[in-house]
Length: 369
Ligand code: PMP
Image 1 (cartoon, rainbow, N blue to C red):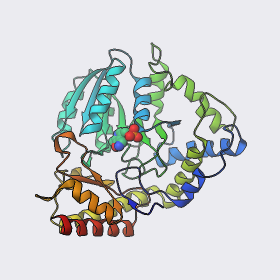
Image 2: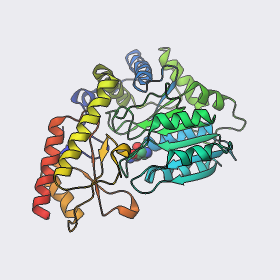
Image 3: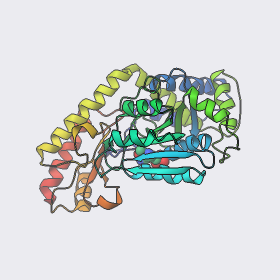
Image 4: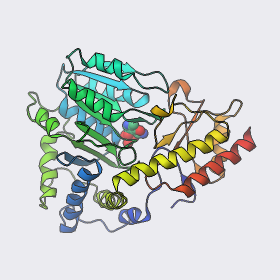
């Protein structure tokens, strides 16, 4: 563990047994022991995503690449897409999909709020959309969208759905298959609990069928499921294969982290994230702080985004918290960047981490206020 506690919304603190995998001698990507790790990681992803018939993909890259892979394989020029945005990362998805020729309609929430479900429903009811995307937890605002409800709306209107779960998978409750969400994308460095470097997603049978029926070539070579699906299938069948060199140590670290996640159990994990988020927010409230999300119903459990008290200099405050041994993050949303800060609490986060972080913040406020 680093000497300072890393409490930003990713990367986060990682379990020592996960970090040990990063330092092991690197195996061949076709060594039987590595094939076994890759195969097990794919199998465990289905359990963590709660998507028993889904197709998992693990590739070297960050969360943006997972978003890109879903977009590249599901969009053809002229497809109509609804992007539902609660902040910074919705804008990214709209821009990304436009590169593939999507005709994007963009619904942007007020800062700290969601786009009302009635607005989404009436837009989808127009019947013109092939696909919709939404950010489960927007890391710039700490706003949580009701993923179950979004899955229902998408299914009811026969629209494919992509959930950006970079700041939610393995922290917030997601039951991909039961909730009818077609693609759930994430990255390794947040609640999944592995250092940065893996793009992860699980696609539904419906999404795979839409992809199989595409008429024009997939517009991104490295992301093309034609090239990656046989690799994922080979590793699951415990057979050697090669398209592009997999990040061996990261995938072994992923295997270890997924084991830890499943040992805890998904329900317990969701409940722990909720409990610790509430505890942290109560601590912040007791210091007189208020939050970007407008109500408890739209507040994430993986991070908290409090406003600085008036007359506190953000840079000075963050520096002081750092001197107190805890690293937290500044604002990200351009319009509000200097008005708030962000604290991640996901993955292996525990009561002691919350107590240390709240203590460091309390002390910093006393000094800089
Ligand atoms: N979506 C969300 C919700 C995120 O929080 C992030 C990263 N903070 C991304 C997408 C992009 O992921 P990455 O930085 O790993 O490319």
